[in-house]
Image 1 (tube, rainbow, N blue to C red):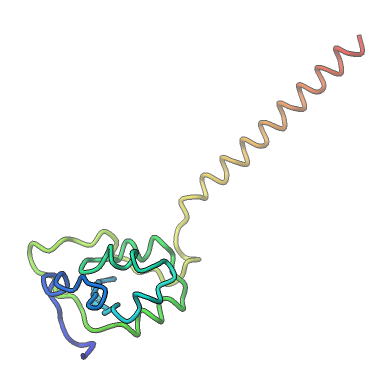
Image 2 (cartoon, rainbow, N blue to C red):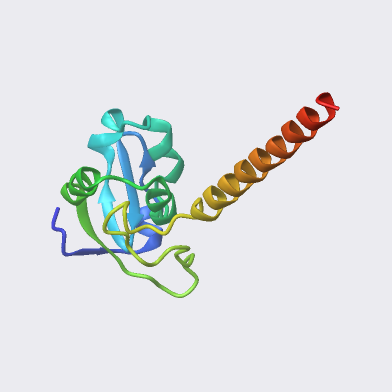
Amino acid sequence: MSADKEFTYSDVSEHTGKKDLYLVVHDKVYNASSFVDEHPGGEEVLLDVGGQDATEAFEDVGHSDEAREILNGLLVGSLKRQPGDPTPKSSTPSTSTSTKPSSDAGMSVAVYALLALGAALAYVAYTYVQGSASK
């Protein structure tokens, strides 16, 4: 099958089985049938997004460059969007996991702030107890 072929969302949605599994990532159509048994996350992960736009699920995991190369080898065509098709939830491809903005960055700062506050309170309590014991 040529990678120049265009598929409609309706075409892709007909391929949802383990032996006939298409999915869409960034408006490109991939035949993942040959990769289902080899997928490190298990076959269920692919079957859950089979016949659908899997862009958000693919990017949320933060796949490696090797995984993206494997995906390119499964390319069979592009998605021809039509009126009424579901809109993609994520339209910007991530080139690497290191460029993906981390929502955990704010959480890390909060954890360090809480640790510093806890250490300060422990120090104050220790000095208070030492002062009370020496009187």
